[in-house]
Length: 104
Image (cartoon, rainbow, N blue to C red; front, side, top):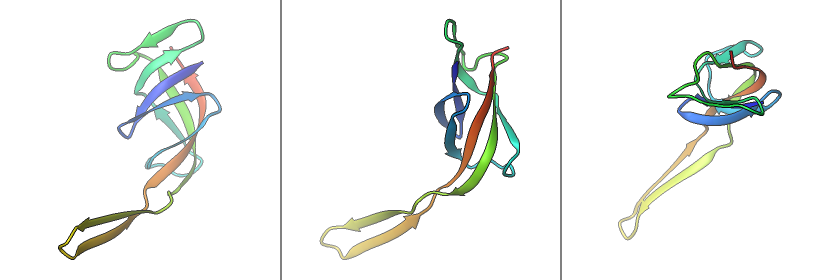
């Protein structure tokens, strides 16, 4: 059984027991979070495709941790003009363990 959920403008293929790193969710560590925007759901034999979401389907997960990703460096320059700009960025994310997929 698996589902494709949408959160933070991105889509993730999840199954029970999977751990995903999605955009920051405003929940405390250890609390449950429900993803209601299920785009596709499959139980092994039947595949339900939502328009835009599958009616009545939801995915339940538990927030494991909230942290920052590794730093990426963004370097912009204009050749022959002595214009250089270096920025660093660390994206916030939440690590979520999928506990239950319900199709009802």
